[in-house]
Image (tube, rainbow, N blue to C red; front, side):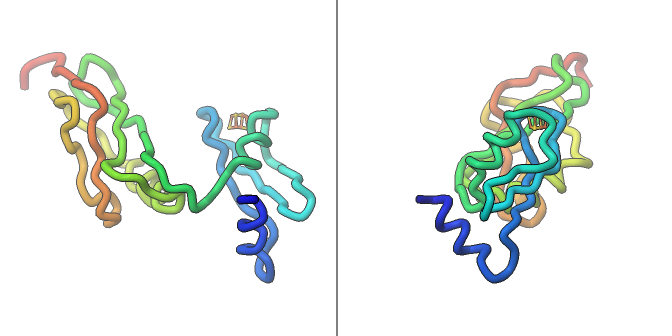
Length: 134
Ligand code: SF4
């Protein structure tokens, strides 16, 4: 049912959707052809499952892993403060490539606001004490 609505969206322009698989850190660049259901570019079968379930307009809370300086752990999971689409998530991911946090960080603390001009804030999912006092 949902797949049909995506097909309509692409009729007349392109019937091929570019998708980055996020099932593992390899992040394969894939293409999904709506007419045939063919997936290409995936290095393993999980990519095909990901592509067929992919909905670009799906709105949900997204999580990201960010590097942390002076923390007990090297990375911290953060989440969006509101549900967002996959497209908006792509804008945020691009912005986060050059971001590093600095401990200490409290659980629930807004570590970044208006990320990439999207109006979305990112919130720490857990406490991250500092390794050394600064
Ligand atoms: S297709 Fe397989 S290898 Fe590629 S990102 Fe997805 S899970 Fe990882």
